[in-house]
Length: 391
Picture: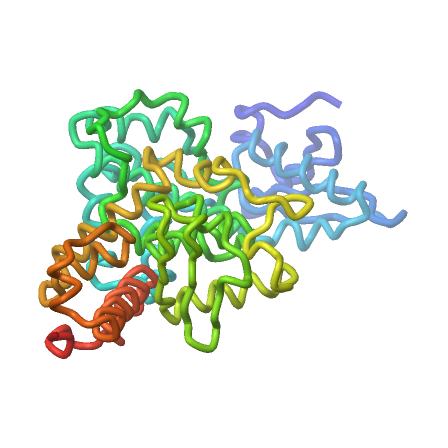
């Protein structure tokens, strides 16, 4: 049977005209033209209409026919497959707006406002119209490369937000893979080293926590979250024992041999930090002589276990101590500087210790870390007024 051509379709007279492989052009007496595919479903012949010639070209009708024959050979319902609406993945901009709408209710107001504004400024002009399932490392680089070294903090923030959109898209079924992280890092140059541990601006920490500590519940991630909430050193957290934890008093009593300065130190535990410990209890045994966040075979976690989570963002685990310290200086104005230093287990002048008795000092540290916990986890609506924190 000779196959149809576009010219033959245009000039076809009333009747049935075969194209091969079960595809037919039907022309009515009135001249109306439509497509029909004939398939075998469970041994029975089925004639299935594909639509008008004005809606489908010859090549499109052939492609649709091939799709339905494949469904029929697999024992499926070709009519249901024909009627299924195509769900084209959205553009990056549409996916970003959907991500913002779905997740923004759990963010702070500042993060909600900044999320789309930074993407509108830097990402939408370059990748906003691209389909979300087509975005690869090279596309993200077109956004980041112009600002990666000139505006490193802003670039890291934008990278994180693009990643959040791509992860949301994967969860929504719009793309097969999550955001590229390690592969993208290898394509980005090293940012300028300030000489200190690379830290994340404190304004970005709530978004980082919201993005990273949702679905993936691992010992390593819990240890990192606990490190952020307590502003502790990574080694102190990785070596913490359940015997050091007092959940009745919500305190972490760190012995001298655990501390960098060789002096015992107590950390007040915010409700958010305690919640992390409760989640750690669900994952591991809580025997008194056991590590709080054990690695394989009960050995301490390696430093790399925590650092690999933040390395793609160009920051360090230790840098979160700087994030906390800057936040305390800029947001907790009524708290004496020595309180924040004490929370970090830094040595403070003797005259400060005389000015504040031990109980009051601990009380102020507790309120400071409680507020930090609420800030980090996006629960700022429950903040205690700083005016109440006066010595």
